[in-house]
Every structure is written in structure tokens, then in C-alpha cells.
Length: 254
Image (cartoon, rainbow, N blue to C red):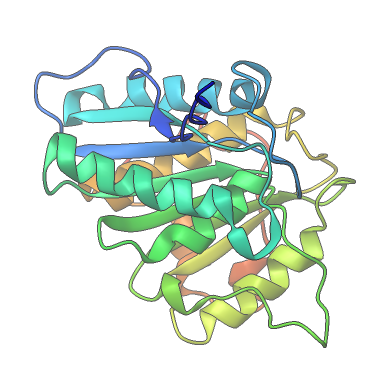
């Protein structure tokens, strides 16, 4: 009896979130969270819930500019050590954007383990920016090489972390940003004081900050003053920038 071949798993892009523009001028790839180690298939719903709201918000904000947003559906649930499956899937997705839409700028936007994937895959030639929300990063180990940052050269990078995050250590994202800032000045990091891993207490401010960053990096809109200041400030000031309550409520682009 012949053995049936095991089907090869492939990553894929979800449907565009929100209204699709007639012409695409920029793309945000949304990278959900995952597990540190797992070869199981990701759940089709739960991991993507945290990025769908972000994707819909950005799609509405950038509709007139030709922005589309896609959730990346991974092959596996886990990062899986040196395999770095989620990062490889993020790189594949950036290449798929080029195949579908041509030479348009891409922002990788990841949450939790997806934040690590966004940072790791940021060196793809189609990617011009990275947004990492509460990124999961490995504990530093003197016996292991540190999380790489050289791939972020030439990209604009924004990290956002709640100071009360009990799942992913905000100090680790600060240390990574500090190392990356030495070779790339276009990196900033905002701290959401008193907020936890999901950034639920200040959700509207976080969405407004993400919108401000994405519209600037993909379409050349002027950044708000806080983002400008964070990018220009030397460490540690620009890497511990507090996200002010009410950010975005009366924000006007110049």
C-alpha cells in the first residue's frame, strides 16, 4: 500500500482588512503572537485577534493613501529555536507583497512573539519600517549570541511596551533598542506606564501612536512632536519615552 505524502505547510496572507483601495501604495503585515516552541498549527482565530483591531484601524486611516493590511498566518505556532519559523514566515510574507503589489513600502507590525518576528525579519529588502508591540524577546545568556539588530539598519523602528507587562520583559526590549540605536538613529521606544501585556488600558493611545508612525514611514506624513522627539533624542531618553494619556485625541498633522 502506497504511503500518502505529508502535505507541506505554507504560510499565507489573510484577506485585506477593511476597505481595499483601488491602487496599493503601502502595506502593513500584521504578525500575531505565538509560542516559544511548538510545531502545532496555529489557531485560526485567537492569535490573530490582537492584531486585527490594529489592522482595521490602520486600514481606515490609510485608505486614501492606498494602504492595505494583511494578517500573516504562520506555518507553525512556535518560534522553535534556531528554526525561527515565525521570522521566516514574516520574510516570506514581505516577498509575497512584492509579488502581488510590486515595489511598495512594507511595515512589519508584530505583537508579542510576532514583535520578535518583525524585528528579526526587518532586514528584508521590501521592508522600510518595523512596529513591535510588547515584543517577546529571549532572556539574555552569556553563552548564546544576543538577539541580532544589524538587520534593522536603514529601517525606522518603533517599539511600544507596557511597564507592568508580566508576560514579556520590557527591560529586554529597552536593551535591544539600545543596541540597535548605536548603528541606527531611526529607532525609538515608548513606555505605556501602568499598562500590561495587552496594552488594553491605553488602547486608543497605542492605536493613535501606531497610526502616526505608519502614516509617517509609509507615506511621508509628518510625525507628531512626541515621535519626532523620541527619534531625535539620544539614549535613554528616546527609548523610554512615556506615551501620554490622551495621545491622538487632538493630534493634528503639520
